[in-house]
Image (cartoon, rainbow, N blue to C red; front, side, top):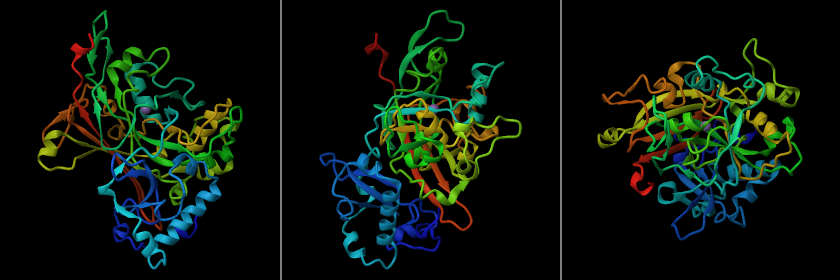
Length: 426
Ligand code: MN
């Protein structure tokens, strides 16, 4: 699975890509969309160092349709990766030509990687599911289906936004403790969820399930995803049909989609804890067992307004790893389509909150504050149980291993702005 594009020693003629802590070295080459001004249509680019390579200007594509790119067969995707690597590596004869197609990332607007047709959110973080289950159902935290079926729900694609946008504190129904009648209120329990987004590449026809050994061929890549959540709305509305207004007001994704090819050096075996059931045969296979998981370090940072005013970039709230997910991304694709449901290029599958096994590895504030009962202490003396107006949540991720070049997923950033006044809703 590894080829020349993963070579640790290869450097780029784009100098910023060679910094050891750069998320986008020549071994990464993630895809995204950008524009020079709001009047311009979205263009397709590849991140290299602190620059973006305009694929159309570089003569690599003759269209601006990301879905068309995502629908490419795997062999064509790998060929494009190889072409990009050849052209961007130090000493390439293409440097003079491609230099003119480079733009500093900080001079362009980065958009959603593509228009998202459908968005599904899974629940693969078993540590998250157990901790949150205890809060909602102390006697029965993990429901009996959890270890057999990848749990998910259909989310809302229209409210997915890109890193850097503002998230308005939502209003909705809550039932206050001890109250008999619910009220309409701005959420008092606004939370983030640390997730990865799986971006569907090639689709499947309606009625045609994707077998597990072909599932990864349908994945274009992954990005960070923040599934913003209003916990007070969620507790009141979630039974019997699951999340609704507690989740659909905003979802944020990072702008760069990192391919499974770039993540190849960071594969790991898929294993189940001792005593847990093995997946049903349609979710089991030799490749998935040997290399279906990915070693990706995930982080949540919080920057409060006070930190921003003091010039602090933020505080690391928690860290976890994609290895702790209960299902692999291939299993999510196969399960999603086993009934014949058709996935289309650009669909997003959220992994669910990726918490680690330790209490301090919770991927949401609900977990870190024990349901709001234990305030989280920040180094500057502030505390939080849930998010306050002006808070900025920053998700980051990277993969690092001996013998491989470190790559990153960039940032997924969102800032809370105050709710609309309730008067306008009454
Ligand atoms: Mn979620």
